[in-house]
Length: 518
Image (cartoon, rainbow, N blue to C red; front, side, top):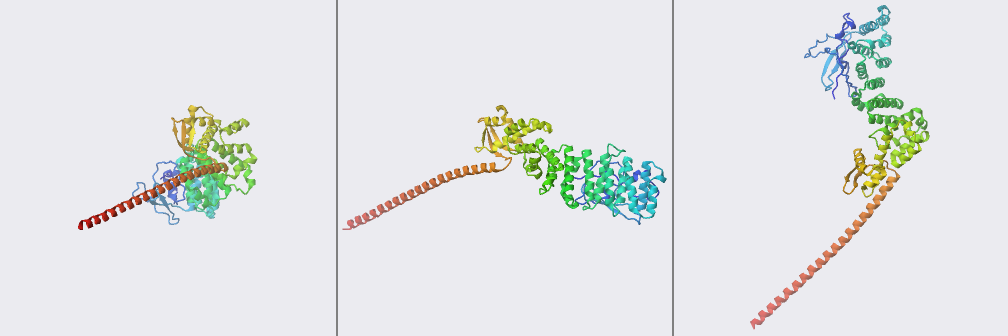
C-alpha cells in the first residue's frame, strides 16, 4: 500500500541572509526527500499537505529547481515516490552547519519572541566560532520545545532542520530522545493537526537512523504514544508486520520488549481492536522467565496477567483458553489469586452448571471485578454446547438434551445451535423433523486425560465395528469361495459326463458300420 509523507522540509538555501520566518515557502522539500527507505523503514501517512511546491531536480516538475549545492557542503539525498517505492529523484541541500544552526537559532528566538542578544543565537555564536558542534546542538535541543509553538506551515520544516543538524553529529543518540520527548507534547500552534505534524517528524527521524540503532526503539515508542492519542491505528497496523525484525535489529532485552508489546496492546485497545490487543498482551506475558518464579508473581506480572484474562473473558470471539492456561504467569494465579484461577479453569474445560455454582459461591466476584455477567453467561452456554457435541459418540444431539444442558426453553435450541456454529466451535446440521442436531465436526476446548479417554473409547468402538465388519467380510469371502468351488466341481462333473456320452456313440457307430459290412 503506497502512502505519502506530508509536504515539509529542509530549507534548500539559507546562505543568502534570509531567515526562516521570511521564507516559509522555501521549506517545501518533502520530508521523505531526506529519507532513503530500506525494507525495514517505517512509513506513516498523516495526510497533512500544505500545498507548497516541491523543489527537486526533476525537469518535468513545474516547481523551480534548487540551485547547485554549496561546494563546501555537498549533500545529496534520495527522494522516494512512496506509491511504488521505485522512482527516485535527487535533492541537494545547501548550507554549512554553522549557517543552518545560526538560522535555526534565530528562528527559535523569533518564535519565543526574545531579544536577539539574550536568545539562543547569541548563546551559540561563540560555540560555533570554537567549532563545538555538540555544544551547539545541546543549546538548540534544549530550546527546541519552543518549536511546538511555531506556525503550522513552518513546524515540520523547522523540526526537520533540527533533525538534519543532529544526524550529522557522531553523538546522535545523545540528542534524539529529547527531540522525541518534545514531539510527544502538544503542538499549541495546531491543536487539530498536532499528532499529524509530530508523526511526520518522527517518521523522518526513524527512517534516518541506522536499522541497528537502538534509538529507533525510543522513536517508535514515541510514535506509538502519538498513534494512541490520535487513534491512527490503521496507519500503524501494516508496520507491525516488521516489529519482530526491528526487535531483532535493536537487540533489546525482555523488559523493553514487554514494554513495547504492552504499548501496542494499549494502542489497539484504544480503538476497539480487542483481539489484537489480547495477542500483544500474550506476547508481553511470554517475556517473563518461567524459571524465575519470583518474577511471575510481581505486581507487574499479575496486573498484566489479569488484564489478559479479563480481555479473553469479555471477548465475544475468544473461546480458546489454552494459550492463556499454558502461561507460567497464569499458573502462578493459583497461589496469588485462586478465584481467578478457578474461573479460568471453568471457562477452559467445564460447563454451564459449574459456572452457575461458581457464581453462587462467589456472588459478587463478577460485579466487583468489572466483568460482564451476560457476556460470561453466553460464552459458557456456547462452550458447554461445544463440549456436549464433542462428547456425543452417536453424533446426534437431541433438542431436549441441549435444552436441559444449556438451561434454555426448547424453542431456543436452534438459535443457540446456530450461534455456536457461527462461533466456529461446531459444524453440523439441524433436523427439525427428527428434532436432533447432526454433528459433523467439533472443537475440543481442552485435550487432556478425559479427552484421551473419550478418544480411546471411540477407538475401541471403531475397533469392534471394524472387527465385526472383518468377520462378516471373512464369512462372506469363505462362502463365496465355497460357492465358487461347488460351481467349479459342478462344471467339471458335467464336462466329464458329456465326454463319456460322446465316446459311446462313436463306438456304436463303428459297430454299426462293421455289421453293415458283413
